[in-house]
Amino acid sequence: MGTDSARALLQRAATLTLQTGNLLNWGCLRKKCPATPSEEVRDCIQKTLTEWSSKIGQDLNQEILEVLECTVAQAIEKINPEERDELKVSAKLFIVGSNSSSIRDAVDLACSALGVAQLDSVIIAPPPIEDGTSLSLEYLQPYWQELENLVQNKKIVAIGTSDLDKTLLEQLYLWAQVKPNSNQVNLASCCVMPPDLTAFAKQFDIQLLTHNDPKELLCEASFQEVLQESIQNTKAHEWIPLWLLRYSVIVKSRGIIKSKGYIIQAKRNAS
Image (cartoon, rainbow, N blue to C red; front, side, top):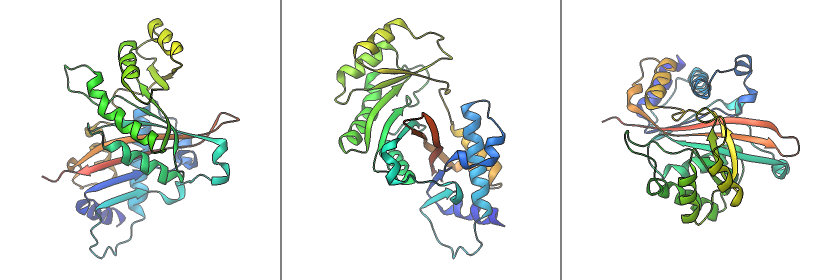
């Protein structure tokens, strides 16, 4: 009967925030190694929704929850303040709907989930652009300004980019008040780092990193599909994902991952 309660809550909420907690605590995910980052995200959303819905009580008192928080309590793991200096907390943020104001919400929720005052680094994936148009500095600027504000407010220490070529990275670097300290390069698109990008990054002390994330880690259709599979007969088509944040907590001295998880926020468009 938990699914019925979950469906009722979803029909009344305006915003859904889903937190997986520390995936390293999930025995079920350890047994299966997802083939792609997209598969991992889908698995995490499905298992979190299924576990969450199974634990919801029936006595809802017709309570209207504007923001519905979907979490698996036993997987949530906050950082011990005494260990904070020994850990590096980094995140990559994927904007699904093109709205730069989502960045502050994502960072605030990540800090709250982990019990920290600030994130050590945040990399932003290029937000979605319309077909036939190319990524430009003008398009990136409002997103970068949001990140800069968070650096100035001491919510983030360092900020980086993903999939920018040398020309666009240089344009951003020259324009930005807070300079990018890293740029991720997708090795699926190039087996060797472009020499012009490497030279520019070396000159301005920008760290070049590699990744294997697809351009769209979580699309609207995929989110709705997994929501429908997890909580059947819900109006999944009304839910639009806004952003997806993947975080990792690394022990600095040993370079091992202590914690990893996802936070996703979606809104209900009932019109």
